[in-house]
Image (cartoon, rainbow, N blue to C red; front, side, top):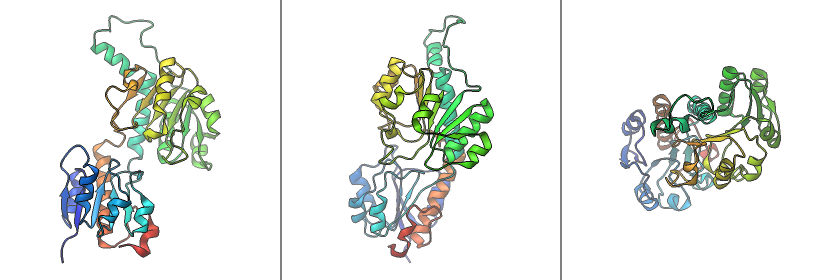
Amino acid sequence: MPRPKVFVSRRIPEVGLNAISAECDVDLWPDRLPPPADELKKRAKDCDGLVSLLTDRIDGALLDSAPKLKVVSNYAVGFNNVDVPACTARGVCVGNTPGVLTDATADIAVTLLLTAARRIGESAADAKSGKWLTWEPLGWLGQDLTGRTLGIVGMGRIGFATAKRLHNGWDMKVLYTEQIPRPEAEREFDARRVELDELLRESDFVSVHVDLNSSTKGMFSSEQFAKMKRTAVFVNSARGPLVDQAALAETLRSGTIFAAGLDVTEPEPLPPDHELYKLPNCVIVPHIASATVETRNAMARLCANNLLAGVRGEPLPNWVNPEVADKRR
């Protein structure tokens, strides 16, 4: 019996590649940059399985050109790059890698908050460039954290983990927005569910943890930033398109808020000459929330397990579209 054929659109950790290679014939894209759309379509044409990343657009046209494709295993928690209804309509299973990123992503959210609040990036750059002349009583003054108010926009797993760290570590009061109450957050750190406007007005730190969809895209614009405190710090470790970046740049430039920390941008990578890079009160890192050895290995295991279950005709361990089960290819 021939082995399933799989295209892997970028090198993932060996623990995942090895598991897939043990059962499948693997075509691995070797470059650091993602395959162009036409190349992705070409490589997937005769495949039974596809390992994709957020940078790979999986749409109806690609699916129609790959009639043998049984499963798309996305190496990410999010799957905005995958047209899930198109996959379901064609009997293609979709998997993702949730759960294992929670702690690493919460750590990055807290790191960005601390870095922006205490002007770490700006002061380190000044030290390196020779602008550190002496100890200065008024030099690089930042914001205190202890006892301040934290606003969590989206109290899912990552929002909860972020709030837990900042409440337990810095005794922060916690406000949050969510479609339904989160009793565990209210019980564990006395969090209070509020509307977004109240959260923006009352919070010293705003950390974003919502999904990207049609209702959340661009949800942070000039109107929202204008409601925040001038001493506030804004952190986004969720998805870049949640934020109007031109509005954020003007907000930071004008001093409407104190600082921002971003792990995600739109587009990615952000062009080196982008105006946000020119602002000393904006810290930007290259989407590294899940970038720990243990986390990326765990993602690779989940990704491989989803892929292998898909080509075997078994239920996916992390199934985005389980409704496809009765009509899968």
